[in-house]
Image 1 (cartoon, rainbow, N blue to C red):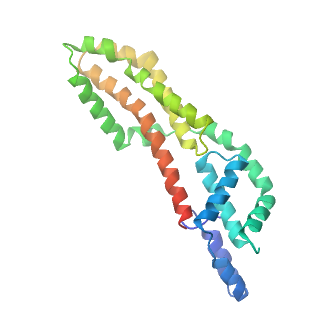
Image 2: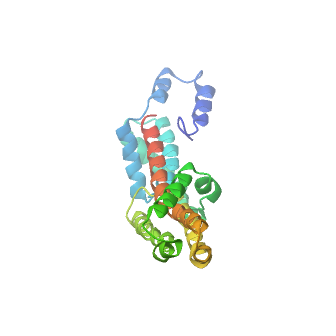
Image 3: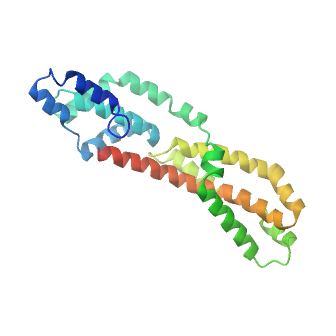
Length: 239
């Protein structure tokens, strides 16, 4: 069951099928919406249940809210308690799949990175900044700066680790970014850096800027996916 912007077809189908035959008080109850505060309470309950990956939790939250809205109970608390008992097996299975879904995550490099306009912005800025550095030749510049694509991710790895073990609003997509960009960083470590050092001309700066831009995307996409999930949650609250 999905609500509003997520996929509300089942509720609409349910209402269309039974609205003509149901009692007036049921129609009124069916059309009642949960408040933002009540939605937050259900979200907190899911966090306490162990759903700390926000993108996965939002799908489950949407499902649970649909069922709560259809419950015939005197109070919201009674309805929520009843739904969590009924959906215990569903919640258990979804919880067990959390880490499986994380491990399977891979950011599509072509779509999320190489075709992303922000990547080209980072690439251009990196190229310009390298050229502005006060060096007499490319060889001297590369001696000091060709390690940048390997050094920049250190801060990102710390950020991702903190996000993984502390945050209750983790996004599985961010770990897809981590896995994919880490693969590219390993490629640079074993092949790319040697290519940069052997060129020793303007093309070496182009290649160095390319890999620098990829590492910067680790930071950008981390916050992009967090913002995307926050917007989805806001949509649910306002539904």
